[in-house]
Image (tube, rainbow, N blue to C red):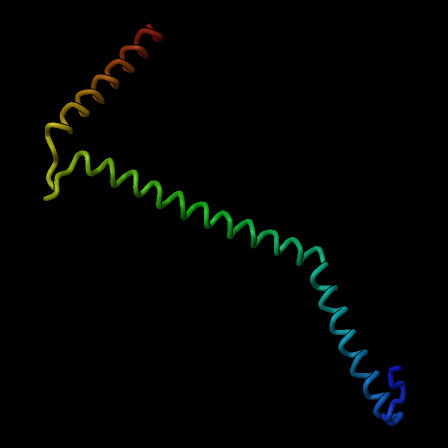
Length: 109
């Protein structure tokens, strides 16, 4: 059997009830803040921003890696251009621009 005797005085019991009410009131206030629509919207915005920052950061790293790899194809270790690779690409670019210019002239004419 459990001991059901309470040795506290009425003043101690009242003080305990008062403390528990205060704790309960604080807990209810915290719950009210957490379920408030503005809090929910703010939390959702923060998560979206964090995810976006993470995604943008990963994309930046990936683009930087690709640019470095492409640059390595056209620049040697000393930083000079590799003419054997730059010249063919430049000629190809000029050819594509020329074809596009001819195509636009034909449509206009």
